[in-house]
Every structure is written in structure tokens, then in C-alpha cells.
Amino acid sequence: MATATAASSSAPITADEKKVIFASSLGTVFEWYDFYLYGTLAAIIGAQFFTPLDPASRNIFALLAFAAGFLVRPFGALVFGRLGDMIGRKYTFLVTILIMGLSTFIVGVLPNYESIGWAAPIILIGLRMLQGLALGGEYGGAATYVAEHAPKGKRGLFTSWIQTTATLGLFLSILVILVTRLSIGEDEFKAWGWRVPFLVSVLLLGVSVWIRLSLNESPAFQKMKAEGKTSKAPLTESFGQWKNLKVVILALIGLTMGQAVVWYTGQFYALFFLTGPLKVDSTTANTMIAIALAIGTPFFIVFGSLSDKIGRKPIIMAGCLIAALTYMPLFKALTEAANPDLARAQSSSKVTITADPKECSFQFNPTGTLKFTSSCDVAKQVLSAGSVSYDDVEGTGPAKIQIGDKSIESYAATGMSPDELKARDAAFKKEVGAALKEHGYPSKADPAKMNKPMIVAILVVLVIFVTMVYGPIAAMLVEMFPTRIRYTSMSLPYHIGNGWFGGFLPFTAAAIVAQTGNMYNGLWYPITFAAITFVVGMLFVRETKDMDIYAND
Image (cartoon, rainbow, N blue to C red; front, side):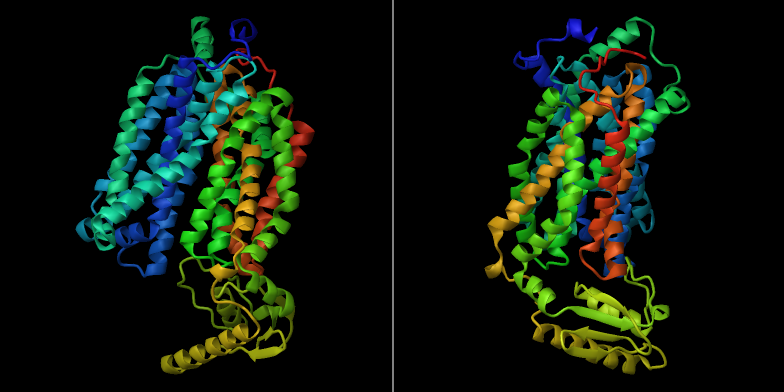
């Protein structure tokens, strides 16, 4: 039994335990290194692999190729979770790190569109899907392996180290990109130097594989194997038997769904909000996010360790609840701190569009290729392009934009020659732009007016919410399932939650904002799912910190 064999919870971490934590965590560094690398270089990758498309569509398709990795993560959880429960944790997540690392490296040597045509983006998407499959097995393997090595009373502490690696991946990717750019120059970087950061990943791969080869199988799996109790059909046991399937469903809805949206809001949607609606330059925004991550990251360990004392559930549920209740005021405070001119203009000179609802289309246009022609759509497109929030008012006749005391009538983009349409569009945009400027709406955030300490403080608070829900989650997921199907069972809800509910948050929130016209309305996506997780988790998810993870029932 774990209670008989585990070390005292007060004993210091041994050298072997440190090695287990380090080797397991290094694989997740790959995840974040690649995540930030690909996201940061999306524009360049789009130009290299989606050359025939217009610039806006290139960027979108580059991001869609990236999203392909999110789509397949749950399938990776099924494939590698099954292997992990049948043949062992060590060898399975050794395979996942090889697939992930080699896929990242191959992106660095992949010929572009100019060389091999449409085969280039097809192969790129294939590599992204391989990475997603590998990631689907990587996290569950690392979390299970570390937890099954942890002494009793330290599973939260041990597994929380895995959660800190996002920051390391962020800084590592920024560092490699910056050094490469400064070394060869911007033109050369765009031509071929962008490949270097992908190629450098082979060094991380080599170190990680070397260390993992020297590890032993987890004691829980060894014990189960010695007793002949390994599962011969982990998928059937996990999802074909209601007693386990209901726990998988509860783990998704009552834990990982809320954890995922809080995580992505605090670290990625906050950055999008700064650079988009608040018009903060990307260098300043990224720097402040990085500072907030550096300050907030130790709290993963704080809350992971605290969960060993007071339980996982109270911390995760508190994080979901506090986030759901405070996102709106926090993001409005972020507006006040980052772009006070915009906050002042929104307060004193509200913008409305009065239009016939029948004229108004769904506004989300991710590729920039849709043509909106009604007077309502034309008006909304002009305001959306300037990240201007507005309210809808039902009316009749041509749509009108009201900015403070200024009223501007829109037009229908039909029945005109191309030259007439171009001139009318330019005149309309100029009139709207002048009215916005007259009423104090800024074209970009003024660095001199930013309250940077306050911005960083708000971002740190958002990151601390992340650490509350994410720090204890690995230990809790491990403890929810019996050893024989643990790898399979915990991986699926984690990757559906983080790969789908979390991974598509920026896209979905942007669609909500585009349709409603209010830059804060995208927050209803994480607020809603965090609130659902809080209610379901409080009612139906039980505490796990004292579970015997050697139990096999």
C-alpha cells in the first residue's frame, strides 16, 4: 500500500525524486516552446507555406494549421493512454517525446510552398497533427509518472512542478528567436532564419530522451504488473463501464473545462485583449505578460503544495469562482490602466448603431474574404476594424452610427462601380475616423499615459487565478482513477478540456465580440464555463488528496 511504502511527507526531496520531476517536466517544456514558437512566427510561417493567399488569409490558415494540433490532442490521449496502461508509463512517454521533438525539428527543414507547392502546407498540417497526438499522451504520462513516484502527502507539490514549465517554454522561445534575429538580421530571419528555433529543438529532445532512458518504471505500475493486474482493454474499462465513464465526465465538466478557460484567459486572451481592443504595441504587451508570468509562476508550487494540506478541490473551485466573478471588473480596470483615453471616451461618448436587424449579418470574418454590403454590415465592419465597442439599437432605414452627439449615415455597398465604391468607402471611413478622434477615441494606446505597474499587477492577479486552478489539477486527475486505467482515463478529460474548451477560447471569444460589438463580451465564454465547472465540481466531484493511488478498483 502507498501508506506503507511512501516516504514521510516532511522528508526533503531526494536526488532520485528530483530527477523524476525534472525528466518528466522537460517534455512539457517542448509543448510550450513549440506553442510560443509557432504562434510568434505564424505570420512568417503563413508567408512561407500559404504563399498564394492574401496576407490576412495566410495568417488565418497558419493559425488553423496550429489549431489542428488542438483538435487531435484527445485522440492522442486515447492512443497513448491505452499504451501507457498496458505496457507502462516510462516507455510510452518516451515515445511521445520522440514524436513531438522530431515533428518540431522537421518543421525546421520542411521545404516551403515555392519549392514543393501545396505539398508543403499539407505536410505542415500533418506534422502539427503528429505533435498534437504526441502531446495528448505526453501530459498524462508525465503527470501519472510523477504522481506515482511522489511520497504520500506530496503529490500536489511534485506534480505542480510540471505546471510551471509554460514559463520556461515562453522565455526559451523568446530568447532563441531574439538571438537568431539579432545575429542574422530581420531580412535573413524572414527568408530562412525562422527555421533555426525549430532546429534548436533537437537539443532539447536529445537531453530529454537521454534522461528519460535512465528512469525506472513507476512503482505503482511495477506493483500492478507484478500482481498481474494490468488492464488488457483500458479503453473499454475507462469509457465502456459507467462507474469509470461517469468519473471521466465529471473530471471534464467539474474540473478541466473550467481550469482550461481560466488558464487561457489569464495568459493568452489577456495578451490578445491588450494588443487588440486596447491597442497596446506588441512589444510592450509581451513584456508585461512575461513579467506577470515570472512573478506568478511560483504560485503553481504554492497552490500545489497547499493542496496537499487542505485538498485539491477547494483551491480549484475557488479559482473558478473568483475568476468568473472578477473577470469583467478586472478587464475593465485593465482598460483604464492600459488605455485611459479609450476608457474615458467609452464613458463620455458611447457609440451606437441604429439599424434594421434584418440587414445585419453575422460579423465574424476570420479570413477577411467575406464581403459585407448592407448599410448595417458596412457600419459594423468599420467600427470593428478600429476595435471600437458599440451598442445595437433597432431602427429602420439606412444604418446610422452615433458617436456622442455626432450622427453618421452608413451606405449600402451595392449598385456602384468599383471606383465609386472605393471613393464612398474612403469617405465614410474618413468621416467615422474624424468623429471618433473628435470624441476622444485614440488610434493606439499612449505609452506615456499607461499605468504599467497597475497593468502588471492586474496581469499577475489573472496568472494567480491560473495557478489556483492548474497547480493542483494534475494530482487530482491522477487520484480520481485506479492505477490500471489511470493514464487513459485522466488524459482524455484533460485534453478535451484544454485542447477544445481552452484552445478555441481566443477564436470563440473573438467571434462573440465581432457579433455583439462589445469588446468585453468575449469574456462571457470563460465566465460561463468556469461557473459551470464550479457548480458541477462543488456538487458532484469529491476530494481526492487522501486517495490511495496504489488501489486498483
